Image (cartoon, rainbow, N blue to C red):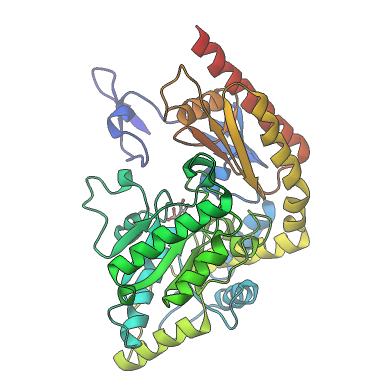
Length: 448
Ligand SMILES: Cc1ncc(COP(=O)(O)O)c(C=O)c1O
């Protein structure tokens, strides 16, 4: 795990992402060794509620035997075979058909990958290929939104709208642009109505498109609701106006459903919650409840035809990956989709969502809480304190929550909660009991 040198310093071999690397010489990681339902346990046996589903993934919790069985069964039958070059494995085709049938586009086509980043990266690559084959070679630029995360590859870290993911890595790459996040809770001007704020966001985007030349913009990349931007709930009129603007300039809409997909927002896909139909979408994470790495690009028939044209011209579609459509993750994903139906997970999210939202709202009586918001089983709490440095409260709340047996995701002065979708009413109450203890702890500390 780690070795200690003479000065008793820790010297970890693993490069831990999303940490300050030198700190890892002073700080051991928290080692998680077991999971059950919505709980996980560290090596000392302490339990935690995973209030953020471990990077918003484990929708069916940490101990779903059916998924383990599905993986083992597939491993026994055929642990691996590549799906490319005129070879296939039935379970992969079955999953593709199922995903295509679930997606809001007609006759959708599915390209598999392993991670969310890889799916988003592939989609960008497909856009360029499509446009080259469709006599639109100038339409290569892509617009994403500030504050949203889309992945860690060169292209998807570029799409990610945070300077901290670019700095030092020579990113963003050319041709990736960012517009404002429709984060009404944090970005609205004093007295600005939701509708006026949405109009302002759309005007900003229009200006950017016109300034860059609409004929050079290929796609707009966005989550339906950006959970990665601390659950920036868009105003009610935002998506209608956005899709009208994109249509006006013939810009494709790419929907990143890596976090929102598979019932998180109270519909199977977030685009249903916000009432739009994308050209293409990407899914990952909850697709397998994260028990196996798998992601997919789901594309409209019309978009796919551009790939076919390019391939016909070139003689081959020169894109594949050894693990793109690995049979074991595919078998797990199929079982996830079956379980979601058999157990009516969507119905459960809809039934329990109001309780979750009410529990968030009930926190607003706490002196550290500035506001809260929720959609489905994703929620955020904005924190504020005159005696604590702004921008650090989320991390402090997450640390105190961890001490009280709860994992949540910090983002500036906000924390995000998105527990496994199987969470019960009692577990929601226990999650908020632990969170309130954490807030009380911070408040007490700040008064000393
Ligand atoms: C919205 C969104 N898109 C894409 C990704 C990238 O997925 P992955 O980490 O599987 O590469 C993430 C990861 O958190 C995400 O939140």
